Image (cartoon, rainbow, N blue to C red; front, side, top):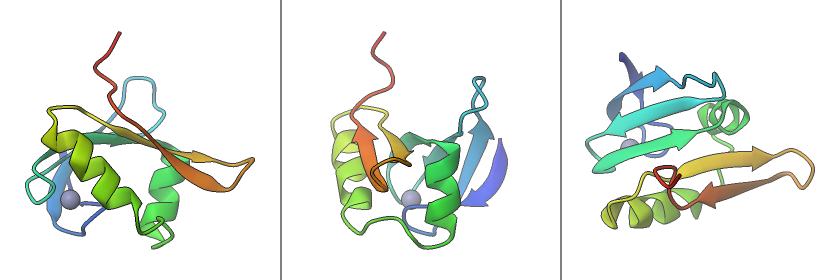
Length: 88
Ligand SMILES: [Zn+2]
């Protein structure tokens, strides 16, 4: 784990690079859990380009005990949130 600010809320969080290398798994005390974010989405989030409704969507899934994942779809230029990466 490495220290990093949360791409959703800016709080002090920790993250590690996913085995697939396609993004990171964050653990954020302020967001009250863990989530994943793809590399493209993370780059845009760090530039402040994350759409404003994404953090609340992610936090709602975390509150349900899920580990959501944020992806950026280059074709449509939009962000999507996958509800839970823990499902097989
Ligand atoms: Zn956070």
